Length: 263
Length: 263
Image (cartoon, rainbow over all chains, first blue to last red; front, side, top):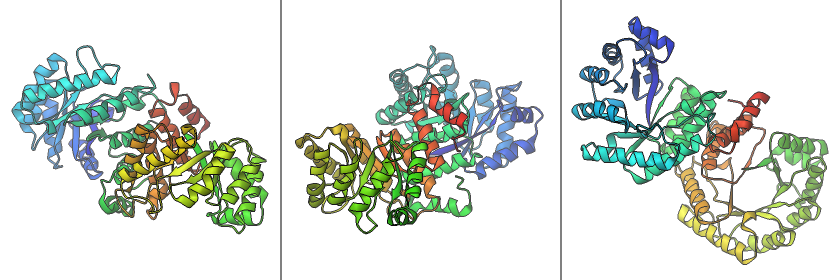
């Protein structure tokens, strides 16, 4: 499973401030720490700062100056995405398109022009459907659009969009059903963030990590998560062990010996 | 999911000694503690002590003197099982039958005579099959035997028998595949112990609890586990929340407020 570090996001007040004042050291430290903790890609977002596009360009340059990983450009603004892609080294991911026409028309051309991978959300002009059936229907349409545009489906990461359990106790199950069926029916990748599911509940990290374990068992291909959460990263190592993704238990034992398995 | 406490087992040296010297207080305390921690049934085993049958009778009487839960009679010895059932109050579970002829012939009549539920292992005279296909084939034969003998399938708990990951990295996946397919094809219950999967690996409890979370997401109906392991019981509460088995997040919030959610 591809681990995408979520910390370089302008919705986090300290990060927002660091972007605003161009605190290179803060940003670069946070990039390095996430990669050292196991992130293979870093999500970057400057939407909460004035001048999203110029800040995105600065953020991409600042991060890739110190870490050698691709970035997940988290924006709905085509100008910000283009500025990021113009300076990005390697193959970027764009986060995200959906069936919303304006978003699709603004961002899909950039995915094609720059040969990016892309996150595709199962939502349309009407928002996020309640049922897994409707989300799967949207996934199908997103897959059709990808195929029609000659996108390689290995580069399309469908996000079935988990909503908070505190709002509806069925929300995680709706997500699990959508994920399982999308994996079964389409030859695409799948992706999720972890924090929505636990929104407004106590001990959110506990919920997030068992949510991730169940998602992994259903074949989730990528997760946007906090790689500095040691118990969460332990959940990844342990679930990989259970799912036969760790031959001879090598990574599990390695993590144990390195002292990074945190119960 | 039915939680069966595993602690009253003569393979545990302290318990073995308590049975041998008839230490009522030790046994009753351990019974009470498990029930208070959430066990709805208690597994009882006296196989490692001389005179299994008489000790089993004593153990059943001693436990049911202080807790009002049914017991899971863990023995391959028909005499010990009969002695247990003669004094047991409520509906007992027998652990276990399999396709091994001697075991089946010795124990199935007791299941029928006393109207018990029963654990049925997916193994035969040749031992435990390597593949999920073969385990499912044995499960099918066990279901046929149950039906032929007018056993209610709600009372039959198939155990697809997880083997240690340290022996073969595929062992948990073989179990998951068997479990999912047995749930899909047959209207039986399913059950598992948790400790085999992590045998000889470090931080076994960590592995056990993510194993349980994945099993629960596949529909496991009962687990024989250590209810005194707080992080494991937290995994149960959290996974129930994720699987829409906790309307309005009530039990999760209750556990949080009671301070029993242990990260």
